[in-house]
Image (cartoon, rainbow, N blue to C red):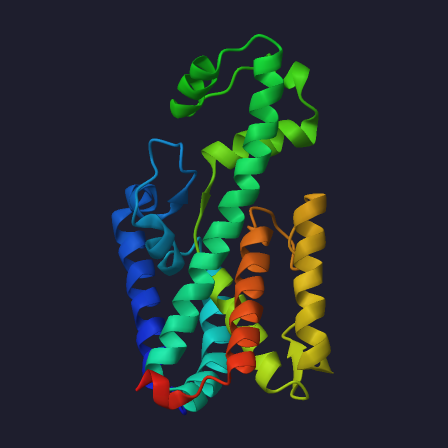
Length: 249
């Protein structure tokens, strides 16, 4: 890889190793390393970190690592390794936090409705902990509420996308007039317009329950938004306090 900085290269290698290892081990690797809902018996304290290095398929890891390669090296070049790694991990954790908070909201909304209609909390959690659902719940919740309620508890999150969105936001913050283009829509757009537009699309799809702009479902849109949000907050804070590279040496 030409012109790739050391930390970015190491992150790409680690992600590839996790991906290859997952292919060799199988679903049990996801059960241990993906990020689960905190009340799920599958949740482990290390998952907010490890989920960042897990991916759901070849195209998933390809796009994330391509973005890391394309934007991460420029940031590491200006910041240095320690500051870049701190930023990258912080955005990944921020993505996990926001996504979990949204899931918690959806879960509590559904749980409160079911409890108000006579279903004991312990019984609901017991059924869900076994990876099951009660079909009677569908009579009390709308289609979208039922989907949000069950997927919040039973679903899991994998991928570096939250950290990557933070990296892209930082790139736009530092190089606002750089021209970017989607791989499938090669129309150059300045970063200061491209990146906010991309984040707004994810926010819309998260709220509406839509699929990815590339097609397909199962996308943690709020994790993308969370990574972008934390990336913006950190960049704003650093700019306000005029952080410099020397503080991270």
